[in-house]
Length: 219
Ligand SMILES: *[C@@H]1O[C@H](CO)[C@@H](O)[C@H](O)[C@H]1NC(C)=O
Ligand SMILES: *[C@@H]1O[C@H](CO)[C@@H](O)[C@H](O)[C@H]1NC(C)=O
Ligand SMILES: *[C@@H]1O[C@H](CO)[C@@H](O)[C@H](O)[C@H]1NC(C)=O
Ligand SMILES: *[C@@H]1O[C@H](CO)[C@@H](O)[C@H](O)[C@H]1NC(C)=O
Image (cartoon, rainbow, N blue to C red; front, side, top):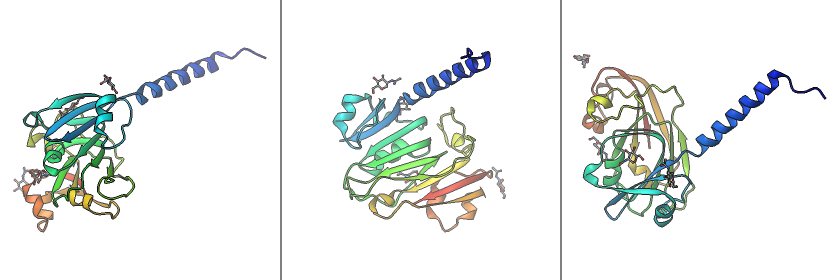
């Protein structure tokens, strides 16, 4: 048999590098934040933890306590999972943040108010309401568009938030229902407040610039 040519050696080593790349990026930790009895724990986990298993998370992940008044508007690059029991903590952690891949698990039987959360740049959403009713996990792909969001810029101010292109509004009452997750998107919405005079929540959202957005309602 002829020895492998220079070309195939090159190919083999390139494949090797690719495989190594996949392997190391597959090991990237994901962020898990959970709230329990007025404490917020921010964890970095290398493995998937069964939803709402607080003790397993404390055991398997590297967690820090976050004081509620120290929570700032931020952005998350990788996967973010939040286990929550009420909307106040969830609003604090998630309202007006940039997250692309999000999983929300309701870990109580509480009925949530019909409040909205505004999220920038959301691409994939998964929700789990098993603690409340025995429905399987649901997922939704919102958009797979190119990254037009200011990825590394934390959305610390309302001015930063205005640079967001993909805006998702999540109706928290969806956690009360057993019906499937639904969404609709409106492209090129310029000056949203004028386009949705009937949507009362809109007036309270600080999205006021005249540039166009892609707005997705999830309910
Ligand atoms: C949680 O930790 C990550 C880093 O691991 C950080 O980027 C993020 O801002 C933290 N979130 C909160 C709410 O403290
Ligand atoms: C990844 O998670 C493990 C625990 O699952 C932790 O020990 C490690 O410090 C984390 N790595 C980073 C970079 O956060
Ligand atoms: C998110 O912020 C908006 C605007 O300030 C507010 O109306 C809404 O109630 C907040 N949502 C939650 C869940 O806190
Ligand atoms: C947005 O457009 C309106 C008219 O449609 C104009 O009066 C207003 O000054 C514009 N605002 C900005 C921030 O460009």
